[in-house]
Length: 328
Image 1 (cartoon, rainbow, N blue to C red):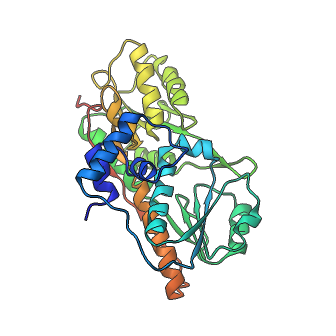
Image 2 (image 1 turned 135 degrees about the vertical axis):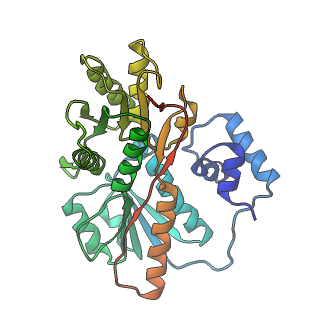
Image 3 (image 1 turned 90 degrees about the vertical axis):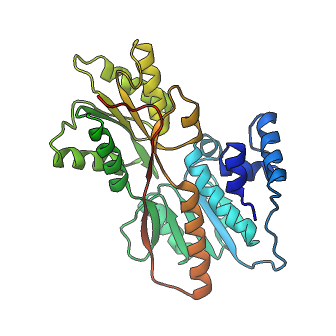
């Protein structure tokens, strides 16, 4: 039987886009052509929504650290939520979505919580006071009473850096972003720390070509402009997100240089945009949709089995080779 991911592959769009089109999501902004492609692919594959005759009594709270608008602009977190909601749809699980601007009272009747994103210690304690059945996605928490699923940034950065070194690069820049939680508490970027550890171990310069801004195209552009003003340029850039990478590519192009002939670019996340850059962006695939599926599956199973032992898991990232990196 065809799945949402089969339809997505046939239509050359994301699974999240397919689900939102088939569920008539009014907040989705996409072209009529894309909608027609998805509907045609679903019909050709005989895709039907999974139905159940027994309504689940489980009530799930989905807590997001982004506002609805910010989430729509970030495919990574949107895919995590889509993985959760696809499971809930198939199992008739009731959902309450919670955003930072909402009242905490909205979560008082839930049977479990999935928290997507980054949260302060105070926020973590608040969510723990609502229910013991709780999972945090995309944020490792040093609390042995909490289940967390996050990306294995050490594995991902190592994979990317080894790939660039195999291509002959030793002057490798790193562009990352600063994130905040709660009332402005700064977070350490695990990708940046993994990059610095790798450089130290392999005796590479991690200072000269490293910059930190935000996880946006605009910031990637500005950080790359700074690097391009230096007398000596890096031969490769490892961007901590695909949005940063896209901005960096634009800055390089404006300088009269070319990717990958002059500077190779490696991204992180594998958002849909990577297939539409020139050249197509080589990146690390972050399994966001799968993280959502794993998280809600564990939460639901733990609820049924009365499991109390928390799970700490890190998901590996896969290198997706396209056209933006070249051997020197």
